[in-house]
Image (cartoon, rainbow, N blue to C red; front, side, top):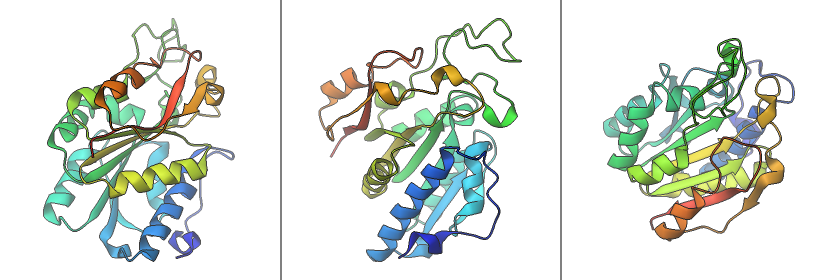
Length: 252
């Protein structure tokens, strides 16, 4: 199936050049490939949160629902329980997933229900003018934190591993092909799949806008001991060091 057939007629309102365009293209490629393989388009469904990421709902010709802020996962869980034959994907931002949605995230990892959670992480509440999120680095200055954010950022991949997620991956939004490959593996994994997409913002938190040079690709990893080392390599607090990209852990 041509990925363009998954488009809608809605006007895209992301900032020109935003890497959300690239995430959208990666998702279209994956859905198109799945449909060509025999998956039914009507059985693919999505849930989005509130934020820049959530607009992807308007641009995909796929069934789904806009969720409340931070409530993507319980909504997706309800959809999967209601119809286990559905392929359910959740799309969230680092704000709603790791702030209001933290408890849902932990328990989704624990329950290991067969669905996929994709988090667009730009380390800022970009839709509401750049306030710090749980993954924002210390010292980040915004209108909401004029003296700089004082808190150590949350490490989501480490939290997912500790909470029992059986598939944990990280990808670079600017790498469309790599993102599509990881998303396909996540969707086909039997269990809870968590995919973090490093997605720098063009307007806010520009200090964390050049992480590509720190990223390196890892082979699909099934060794939990190695995974524990991989999730520790980057602490979200600096634009220095190394950032592993790929399937950081897959139980099977």
